[in-house]
Image (cartoon, rainbow, N blue to C red; front, side):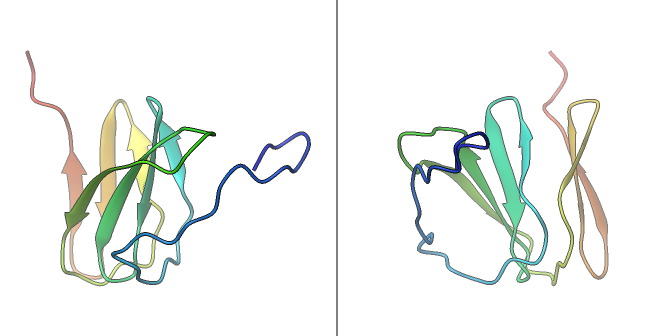
Length: 89
């Protein structure tokens, strides 16, 4: 959706389906959202079309929103907290 005009740009349901409890977060042109089954979808922040960039499974229940801090992606499941970061150069 366009936040100013409320115009819908696109709508889809990824093939992986699932139910989502938490919110989407935006970082570096990517949108992150984690399903209740523990699958994190990485989407391109593209207003013209839906683009699934990656799908990462933790296979643990998750009812939270991913967090971004200092370039790290932090995911909390019912049993663990994960910190995902790009390797140092």
